Image 1 (cartoon, rainbow, N blue to C red):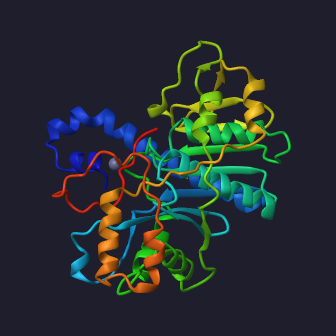
Image 2 (cartoon, rainbow, N blue to C red; image 1 turned 90 degrees about the vertical axis):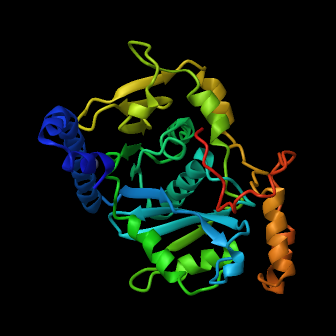
Length: 355
Ligand SMILES: [Zn+2]
Protein backbone atom coordinates (compact mmCIF):
# COMPACT_ATOMS: atom_id res chain seq x y z
CA UNK A 1 0.00 0.00 0.00
CA UNK A 2 1.39 3.46 -0.85
CA UNK A 3 1.46 6.45 1.55
CA UNK A 4 -1.67 7.94 0.04
CA UNK A 5 -3.64 4.69 0.15
CA UNK A 6 -2.52 4.14 3.72
CA UNK A 7 -3.47 7.66 4.78
CA UNK A 8 -6.90 7.12 3.23
CA UNK A 9 -7.36 3.79 5.00
CA UNK A 10 -6.95 5.27 8.48
CA UNK A 11 -8.73 8.58 7.82
CA UNK A 12 -12.06 9.46 9.42
CA UNK A 13 -15.22 9.24 7.35
CA UNK A 14 -15.24 13.05 7.01
CA UNK A 15 -11.65 13.10 5.75
CA UNK A 16 -12.37 10.18 3.42
CA UNK A 17 -15.14 12.23 1.88
CA UNK A 18 -12.71 15.14 1.33
CA UNK A 19 -10.11 12.81 -0.22
CA UNK A 20 -12.63 11.03 -2.41
CA UNK A 21 -11.81 12.62 -5.78
CA UNK A 22 -8.06 12.37 -5.19
CA UNK A 23 -8.06 8.71 -4.16
CA UNK A 24 -10.40 7.76 -6.99
CA UNK A 25 -8.06 9.37 -9.52
CA UNK A 26 -5.09 7.66 -7.87
CA UNK A 27 -6.68 4.19 -7.95
CA UNK A 28 -7.90 4.71 -11.50
CA UNK A 29 -4.34 5.53 -12.63
CA UNK A 30 -2.95 2.56 -10.75
CA UNK A 31 -5.39 0.30 -12.57
CA UNK A 32 -4.87 1.95 -15.97
CA UNK A 33 -1.07 1.73 -15.88
CA UNK A 34 -1.18 -1.93 -14.84
CA UNK A 35 -3.76 -2.75 -17.50
CA UNK A 36 -1.63 -1.07 -20.11
CA UNK A 37 1.43 -3.05 -19.05
CA UNK A 38 -0.52 -6.32 -19.25
CA UNK A 39 -1.97 -5.38 -22.63
CA UNK A 40 1.45 -4.54 -24.06
CA UNK A 41 2.91 -7.72 -22.60
CA UNK A 42 0.28 -9.65 -24.52
CA UNK A 43 1.05 -7.71 -27.69
CA UNK A 44 4.73 -8.55 -27.22
CA UNK A 45 3.84 -12.24 -26.92
CA UNK A 46 2.09 -12.09 -30.28
CA UNK A 47 4.64 -9.93 -32.11
CA UNK A 48 8.27 -11.01 -31.76
CA UNK A 49 9.60 -7.65 -32.96
CA UNK A 50 7.99 -5.87 -29.97
CA UNK A 51 10.16 -5.73 -26.86
CA UNK A 52 8.32 -4.93 -23.61
CA UNK A 53 10.49 -4.41 -20.53
CA UNK A 54 10.70 -2.83 -17.08
CA UNK A 55 13.89 -1.24 -15.81
CA UNK A 56 15.03 -0.01 -12.42
CA UNK A 57 18.18 0.80 -10.48
CA UNK A 58 18.94 -1.57 -7.64
CA UNK A 59 19.81 -0.26 -4.18
CA UNK A 60 23.54 0.41 -4.00
CA UNK A 61 25.69 -2.70 -3.55
CA UNK A 62 28.92 -2.08 -1.64
CA UNK A 63 32.40 -3.53 -1.33
CA UNK A 64 33.86 -4.85 0.76
CA UNK A 65 30.65 -6.69 1.68
CA UNK A 66 31.08 -9.10 4.56
CA UNK A 67 29.80 -10.04 7.97
CA UNK A 68 32.70 -8.24 9.66
CA UNK A 69 31.60 -5.54 12.12
CA UNK A 70 34.88 -3.69 11.59
CA UNK A 71 33.52 -2.50 8.24
CA UNK A 72 30.55 -0.69 9.65
CA UNK A 73 31.97 2.81 10.07
CA UNK A 74 34.14 2.79 6.96
CA UNK A 75 33.11 4.25 3.65
CA UNK A 76 32.69 1.53 1.04
CA UNK A 77 32.82 1.47 -2.72
CA UNK A 78 29.44 1.54 -4.46
CA UNK A 79 28.50 -0.86 -7.24
CA UNK A 80 25.44 -0.02 -9.32
CA UNK A 81 23.05 -2.29 -11.18
CA UNK A 82 20.41 -1.16 -13.61
CA UNK A 83 18.27 -4.22 -14.16
CA UNK A 84 16.08 -4.66 -17.20
CA UNK A 85 13.43 -7.35 -17.21
CA UNK A 86 12.03 -8.48 -20.55
CA UNK A 87 8.37 -9.05 -19.66
CA UNK A 88 7.65 -11.26 -22.65
CA UNK A 89 10.68 -13.55 -22.66
CA UNK A 90 10.97 -13.35 -18.85
CA UNK A 91 14.69 -12.68 -19.23
CA UNK A 92 16.71 -10.55 -16.82
CA UNK A 93 19.61 -8.27 -17.79
CA UNK A 94 21.96 -6.51 -15.38
CA UNK A 95 23.93 -3.43 -16.48
CA UNK A 96 26.61 -3.00 -13.85
CA UNK A 97 29.41 -0.58 -13.01
CA UNK A 98 31.02 0.93 -9.93
CA UNK A 99 31.58 4.46 -8.76
CA UNK A 100 35.19 4.50 -9.92
CA UNK A 101 33.72 4.19 -13.45
CA UNK A 102 30.74 6.53 -13.37
CA UNK A 103 27.96 8.07 -11.31
CA UNK A 104 24.37 6.85 -11.26
CA UNK A 105 22.39 9.66 -12.78
CA UNK A 106 20.28 10.22 -15.86
CA UNK A 107 23.24 9.85 -18.23
CA UNK A 108 24.14 6.49 -16.78
CA UNK A 109 20.61 5.12 -16.81
CA UNK A 110 20.22 6.34 -20.41
CA UNK A 111 23.50 4.64 -21.37
CA UNK A 112 22.29 1.29 -19.99
CA UNK A 113 18.97 1.54 -21.81
CA UNK A 114 20.80 2.53 -24.99
CA UNK A 115 23.02 -0.55 -24.65
CA UNK A 116 20.01 -2.79 -24.01
CA UNK A 117 18.24 -1.42 -27.08
CA UNK A 118 21.36 -1.74 -29.27
CA UNK A 119 21.93 -5.36 -28.24
CA UNK A 120 18.29 -6.34 -28.75
CA UNK A 121 18.23 -4.79 -32.22
CA UNK A 122 21.43 -6.64 -33.15
CA UNK A 123 20.43 -9.98 -31.64
CA UNK A 124 16.68 -10.11 -31.73
CA UNK A 125 15.61 -7.95 -34.65
CA UNK A 126 13.38 -5.88 -32.33
CA UNK A 127 11.95 -2.83 -34.01
CA UNK A 128 9.66 -1.56 -31.28
CA UNK A 129 10.46 -1.00 -27.62
CA UNK A 130 8.15 -0.31 -24.75
CA UNK A 131 9.56 0.43 -21.30
CA UNK A 132 7.85 0.71 -17.92
CA UNK A 133 9.49 2.38 -14.91
CA UNK A 134 8.80 4.40 -11.81
CA UNK A 135 8.68 8.20 -11.89
CA UNK A 136 12.14 9.03 -10.50
CA UNK A 137 12.99 12.38 -12.10
CA UNK A 138 16.75 12.06 -11.65
CA UNK A 139 16.91 8.67 -13.28
CA UNK A 140 13.93 7.94 -15.52
CA UNK A 141 12.01 11.09 -16.33
CA UNK A 142 14.33 13.76 -17.68
CA UNK A 143 15.88 15.36 -20.76
CA UNK A 144 18.80 12.92 -20.98
CA UNK A 145 16.44 9.94 -21.27
CA UNK A 146 14.31 11.82 -23.80
CA UNK A 147 17.45 12.78 -25.77
CA UNK A 148 18.49 9.13 -25.88
CA UNK A 149 15.15 8.16 -27.45
CA UNK A 150 15.16 11.15 -29.81
CA UNK A 151 18.68 10.19 -30.86
CA UNK A 152 17.51 6.67 -31.70
CA UNK A 153 14.63 8.07 -33.75
CA UNK A 154 16.97 10.43 -35.62
CA UNK A 155 19.45 7.81 -36.84
CA UNK A 156 18.08 6.74 -40.19
CA UNK A 157 20.04 3.50 -40.31
CA UNK A 158 18.54 2.18 -37.05
CA UNK A 159 15.71 -0.28 -37.65
CA UNK A 160 13.71 1.05 -34.68
CA UNK A 161 10.20 2.16 -35.60
CA UNK A 162 8.94 3.25 -32.20
CA UNK A 163 10.10 3.54 -28.59
CA UNK A 164 7.72 4.38 -25.77
CA UNK A 165 8.33 4.75 -22.07
CA UNK A 166 5.42 4.57 -19.64
CA UNK A 167 5.57 5.70 -16.02
CA UNK A 168 3.67 3.49 -13.59
CA UNK A 169 1.43 5.18 -11.02
CA UNK A 170 3.59 6.64 -8.23
CA UNK A 171 3.31 4.52 -5.09
CA UNK A 172 2.32 1.48 -7.13
CA UNK A 173 5.37 0.90 -9.30
CA UNK A 174 5.94 -2.71 -8.20
CA UNK A 175 6.61 -4.81 -11.26
CA UNK A 176 7.88 -8.16 -12.49
CA UNK A 177 11.48 -6.88 -12.52
CA UNK A 178 11.59 -6.30 -8.74
CA UNK A 179 12.31 -9.96 -8.08
CA UNK A 180 15.72 -9.60 -9.77
CA UNK A 181 16.97 -7.37 -6.98
CA UNK A 182 15.62 -9.71 -4.31
CA UNK A 183 17.31 -12.70 -5.97
CA UNK A 184 20.69 -10.90 -6.09
CA UNK A 185 20.39 -9.73 -2.48
CA UNK A 186 19.49 -13.23 -1.33
CA UNK A 187 22.48 -14.70 -3.16
CA UNK A 188 24.80 -12.23 -1.41
CA UNK A 189 23.80 -13.27 2.12
CA UNK A 190 26.63 -14.96 4.03
CA UNK A 191 28.99 -14.28 1.13
CA UNK A 192 32.07 -12.04 1.15
CA UNK A 193 32.27 -9.71 -1.83
CA UNK A 194 35.51 -7.77 -2.12
CA UNK A 195 35.32 -6.11 -5.54
CA UNK A 196 32.65 -4.86 -7.95
CA UNK A 197 33.68 -7.61 -10.39
CA UNK A 198 32.66 -10.15 -7.77
CA UNK A 199 29.25 -8.46 -7.63
CA UNK A 200 29.01 -8.86 -11.43
CA UNK A 201 29.81 -12.57 -11.11
CA UNK A 202 27.41 -12.96 -8.21
CA UNK A 203 24.57 -11.36 -10.21
CA UNK A 204 25.22 -13.62 -13.17
CA UNK A 205 24.97 -16.73 -11.01
CA UNK A 206 22.30 -15.50 -8.57
CA UNK A 207 19.33 -17.05 -10.33
CA UNK A 208 19.15 -20.73 -9.54
CA UNK A 209 16.32 -21.75 -11.87
CA UNK A 210 15.89 -21.02 -15.58
CA UNK A 211 18.16 -18.77 -17.62
CA UNK A 212 20.72 -16.82 -15.57
CA UNK A 213 20.72 -13.02 -15.60
CA UNK A 214 22.88 -11.67 -18.36
CA UNK A 215 25.37 -9.19 -16.95
CA UNK A 216 26.91 -6.39 -19.02
CA UNK A 217 29.77 -4.39 -17.54
CA UNK A 218 29.13 -0.76 -18.41
CA UNK A 219 32.75 0.46 -18.23
CA UNK A 220 33.50 1.79 -21.71
CA UNK A 221 29.81 1.99 -22.65
CA UNK A 222 28.81 5.19 -20.83
CA UNK A 223 27.65 7.93 -23.21
CA UNK A 224 27.03 11.61 -22.65
CA UNK A 225 23.33 12.05 -23.40
CA UNK A 226 23.31 15.28 -21.43
CA UNK A 227 25.26 16.92 -24.26
CA UNK A 228 22.70 15.53 -26.72
CA UNK A 229 19.85 16.88 -24.59
CA UNK A 230 21.23 20.38 -25.21
CA UNK A 231 20.58 19.79 -28.89
CA UNK A 232 17.42 17.70 -28.80
CA UNK A 233 15.55 19.01 -25.76
CA UNK A 234 16.76 22.48 -24.87
CA UNK A 235 13.82 24.31 -26.38
CA UNK A 236 11.13 21.68 -26.68
CA UNK A 237 7.71 23.23 -27.18
CA UNK A 238 4.23 21.94 -27.95
CA UNK A 239 3.86 22.15 -31.70
CA UNK A 240 0.68 24.24 -31.78
CA UNK A 241 0.43 26.10 -28.47
CA UNK A 242 4.22 26.54 -28.00
CA UNK A 243 3.76 25.52 -24.36
CA UNK A 244 6.80 24.16 -22.51
CA UNK A 245 6.71 20.50 -21.46
CA UNK A 246 5.76 19.70 -17.86
CA UNK A 247 8.19 16.92 -17.08
CA UNK A 248 6.90 15.95 -13.65
CA UNK A 249 3.38 15.44 -15.00
CA UNK A 250 4.33 13.17 -17.90
CA UNK A 251 2.83 9.69 -17.95
CA UNK A 252 4.58 8.53 -21.11
CA UNK A 253 7.16 9.52 -23.72
CA UNK A 254 7.28 8.23 -27.27
CA UNK A 255 9.46 8.65 -30.36
CA UNK A 256 8.79 7.38 -33.86
CA UNK A 257 11.11 6.82 -36.77
CA UNK A 258 8.59 8.39 -39.14
CA UNK A 259 8.70 11.64 -37.11
CA UNK A 260 12.36 12.04 -36.12
CA UNK A 261 13.16 14.84 -33.64
CA UNK A 262 9.58 14.88 -32.32
CA UNK A 263 8.99 13.87 -28.70
CA UNK A 264 5.42 12.70 -28.10
CA UNK A 265 4.07 12.89 -24.56
CA UNK A 266 0.87 12.25 -22.62
CA UNK A 267 -0.08 13.76 -19.27
CA UNK A 268 -2.81 11.26 -18.30
CA UNK A 269 -2.78 7.48 -18.24
CA UNK A 270 -6.04 7.25 -20.18
CA UNK A 271 -4.92 9.73 -22.84
CA UNK A 272 -4.47 8.12 -26.25
CA UNK A 273 -3.62 11.17 -28.34
CA UNK A 274 0.05 11.97 -27.78
CA UNK A 275 1.07 15.65 -27.78
CA UNK A 276 3.98 16.37 -30.15
CA UNK A 277 6.86 18.44 -28.78
CA UNK A 278 9.31 19.91 -31.24
CA UNK A 279 12.70 21.43 -30.67
CA UNK A 280 13.59 24.96 -31.73
CA UNK A 281 17.25 24.03 -32.35
CA UNK A 282 17.94 23.28 -36.03
CA UNK A 283 17.93 19.57 -36.84
CA UNK A 284 21.13 19.65 -38.91
CA UNK A 285 23.10 20.45 -35.77
CA UNK A 286 21.74 17.50 -33.84
CA UNK A 287 22.20 15.19 -36.81
CA UNK A 288 25.87 16.19 -36.90
CA UNK A 289 26.38 15.28 -33.25
CA UNK A 290 24.38 12.13 -33.80
CA UNK A 291 27.10 10.80 -36.07
CA UNK A 292 29.28 10.07 -33.05
CA UNK A 293 27.72 9.58 -29.67
CA UNK A 294 29.74 11.58 -27.08
CA UNK A 295 31.59 9.28 -24.69
CA UNK A 296 31.27 9.87 -20.96
CA UNK A 297 34.65 9.68 -19.26
CA UNK A 298 36.35 10.55 -15.98
CA UNK A 299 33.12 10.35 -14.05
CA UNK A 300 34.50 8.73 -10.92
CA UNK A 301 32.72 9.79 -7.74
CA UNK A 302 35.23 8.22 -5.34
CA UNK A 303 36.08 10.88 -2.75
CA UNK A 304 39.51 11.19 -1.15
CA UNK A 305 37.97 10.27 2.22
CA UNK A 306 36.40 7.13 0.77
CA UNK A 307 39.59 6.06 -0.95
CA UNK A 308 41.45 6.57 2.33
CA UNK A 309 38.94 4.33 4.11
CA UNK A 310 39.24 1.65 1.43
CA UNK A 311 43.03 1.75 1.63
CA UNK A 312 42.83 1.57 5.41
CA UNK A 313 40.78 -1.63 5.03
CA UNK A 314 43.46 -2.93 2.67
CA UNK A 315 46.21 -2.11 5.20
CA UNK A 316 44.29 -4.01 7.88
CA UNK A 317 43.79 -6.93 5.48
CA UNK A 318 40.02 -6.62 5.91
CA UNK A 319 40.31 -6.57 2.12
CA UNK A 320 42.60 -9.45 1.08
CA UNK A 321 45.93 -8.63 -0.59
CA UNK A 322 44.97 -9.79 -4.06
CA UNK A 323 42.45 -6.92 -4.36
CA UNK A 324 44.69 -4.08 -3.12
CA UNK A 325 45.86 -3.22 -6.61
CA UNK A 326 42.26 -2.59 -7.70
CA UNK A 327 41.60 -0.24 -4.79
CA UNK A 328 44.88 1.66 -5.06
CA UNK A 329 44.26 2.31 -8.77
CA UNK A 330 40.75 3.74 -8.26
CA UNK A 331 40.54 7.21 -9.82
CA UNK A 332 39.38 10.01 -7.54
CA UNK A 333 36.45 12.25 -8.36
CA UNK A 334 37.46 15.41 -10.15
CA UNK A 335 36.40 17.93 -7.48
CA UNK A 336 37.88 16.65 -4.29
CA UNK A 337 39.23 19.97 -3.07
CA UNK A 338 36.42 20.32 -0.51
CA UNK A 339 37.56 18.29 2.50
CA UNK A 340 34.96 16.02 4.06
CA UNK A 341 34.63 16.38 7.85
CA UNK A 342 36.47 13.66 9.76
CA UNK A 343 33.36 12.89 11.82
CA UNK A 344 31.18 12.35 8.74
CA UNK A 345 29.09 9.18 8.97
CA UNK A 346 29.96 6.31 6.66
CA UNK A 347 28.61 6.94 3.20
CA UNK A 348 26.89 4.09 1.47
CA UNK A 349 27.02 5.72 -1.93
CA UNK A 350 26.72 8.99 -3.76
CA UNK A 351 23.46 10.85 -3.75
CA UNK A 352 21.52 10.93 -6.97
CA UNK A 353 21.12 14.39 -8.33
CA UNK A 354 18.33 15.28 -10.68
CA UNK A 355 19.52 16.26 -14.11
ZN1 LIG B 1 -1.79 4.17 -3.53
